[in-house]
Image (cartoon, rainbow, N blue to C red; front, top):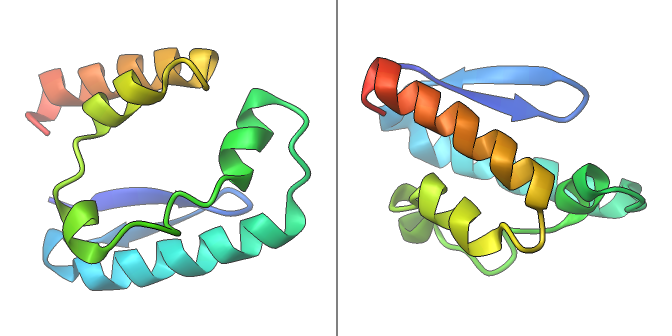
Length: 97
C-alpha cells in the first residue's frame, strides 16, 4: 500500500510503508519551512504553522494513531478534527487503514 502525504503548496508525495525514514525527513523539512513562513490567522493556518515534529522521534511517528491524536487535539482544532475524523473513518472503512 502507498501512503500519500500532503506537502506544502498542494504538492504530494507517494511513500511506500517501508520508506518511513524518507517520509519522516520530508515532514521535518516541510515543517521547518512552514514555521518560518506562516502567520496564523485561522484554524488551518494555525495548524499548518505548528511544529508538531519538534518533539517527536521516528519511533513515535511510526506508532502514531491519527484518530487518537485528533481526539486529543480537537479542542484546539475543532473544524479540522471533525474533517480528519470523517476522512480517517472513511479510509478505515474502505481500506482497513
